Image: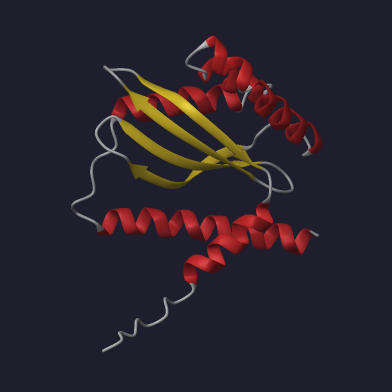
Length: 161
């Protein structure tokens, strides 16, 4: 079990490093808006507090979203309770700009013995970035499968004359 957890953590660290290297190698990459990083920082400071559900509840843009996201918060709290305590930190896995006013960011939340993946969709109508969608993934085995699939070479295309 420890070996599998070590493999998962090593894979996540490698993915994060590759993401940062690819971003540094792309001179045309859009700069990350400082206000977006501030919004993400506030979210994670709450998440890494006592209960992740507090971060999820406070990130909800409307009362309807707050009620809809309540189950996600409860599942995150349960994961934390069964993972030996508070979140040990977080790291960015992937980021994709979806235009000037929308940004998808995937993170991992560090827990002992296994991390959790958190997907956030940020939106800015005016000057304030808000989380408008959240998904929490508790299955590290799925990450291994996705990483393996992304590393597979694409088959050559053959055309029919």
